[in-house]
Image (tube, rainbow, N blue to C red; front, side):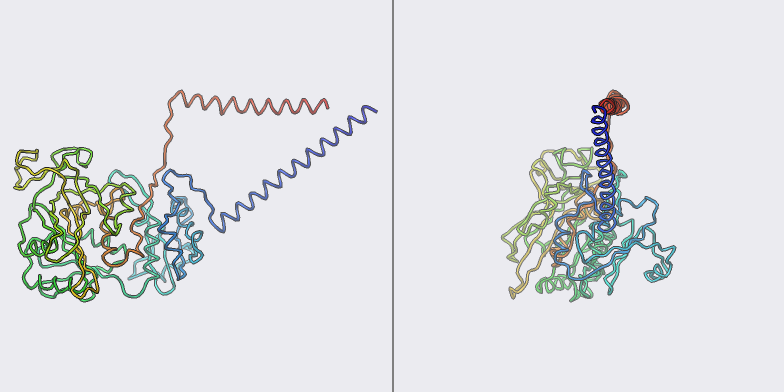
Length: 479
């Protein structure tokens, strides 16, 4: 009788164990199916990276909330593992907006597709993304989605480049036009021009003295002129700004004074001092040498919060070879003047700039906090529009040093924010989205820590599992 009772209990336990085991296996299978479907259909990820590499910004979410046109992203990614980071980021777009569809295309198996988007005989490259709205398309290359700083650190720029491409293909037919002035001995503007073109601006040139400012110009940029403006050129500027125009004037220390242009900018309340600024605070100087002019000025917020996002990010702006500016609200144009870049209070300036000058701080040098960049805005004579002028005492911050394209510095975003605000694109442009660090984080451990982990993982945990299993087996055996 007792043996029969034990047999019944044993049988019941075995049946219960079989049911629990079968249920557990079924749950695991169902979880795998659900996870696969989520990942396949919605590219489901939980971003555990330190810098939230694959998490989109609020600016992107806001943009998609107001997006009206459907777009398709054609990702030309071979299945070789090299594009995994880009894939993870690209696959977030359909999750954020139903108006975005994502399709992967193998251009080697589908050469007709590649030919459709080839321009001038130039083929479409692997690892590119084609953003197509049906009416317009734009190709974003891998070089644009990945960025490297001077130290070789890699950052992911997928979010910003794809969003700006979407802005381009879903926008109207009238591009925002920016003209660089010529004929005044201006310096190179290649890096600036490339940055603006990538941000969907139409870039061209104009000789203000001979042709005036084009009527379709949303903004003009004068890059470190060395020849003074003629009275005719000044009249052209005046007429342009009287009709709501916008301009940026970049200067560099050591260049001769330009009385007519200098006087014109002083009418707007900004005087270029033609000196050379040195930063006395070592923590605000990029150069390891205290005698090299590479200040890291503080970005200033203004009434319109143009640079509030940059201030929040805390990314440094580097202003090599800067002249200081003197600002005055009591100006002929009745313009409101706002400082946008300032040194620390320990800065000093050199007035007589020569190749053999002493760069150390000397008696007679002006000391204190200096403005390196500013903007001035005024109402047009009919009060129906606003004109804006941006003046920078540093040309080298935007051209010739690569700072404008380096994700580790705020120079590029700073200038694009100014341009976006001046030209009325501040509600559409996504210039404040910074590239995300794509370098792999490393866990540093001492030899003792490595040995401890080895013992725990290879011996302690397996022994605990074995002991628990042995105890359960023994108990069930004698039931």
